[in-house]
Image (cartoon, rainbow, N blue to C red):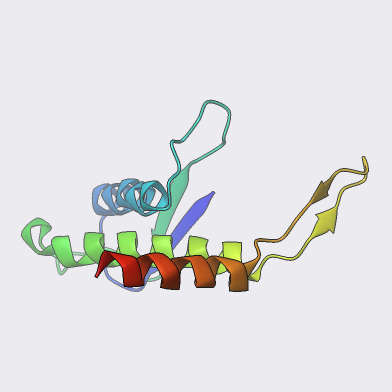
Length: 112
């Protein structure tokens, strides 16, 4: 579940579009939004929309920021997660952040 919060005075339609854009941030992390994955998004604003709402033509910056913030928050969740064992005894292991960083450094250097 992705929740997008803003203090921009956006209309309901604009917030719906913002929520949809957040799914692009999810896609950037490699998600394919598989069946039964539960991928969904909502957006809300702390400001009431009024006649001073952001013009539709000016929303691209909000869309870009939403995509980037969503992608970054997902990576943050992946790299700060801890190994856990569920009540059924199954263990989900944390992502080995240092090993991933090492792989990224190695391939970044080879690509240059």
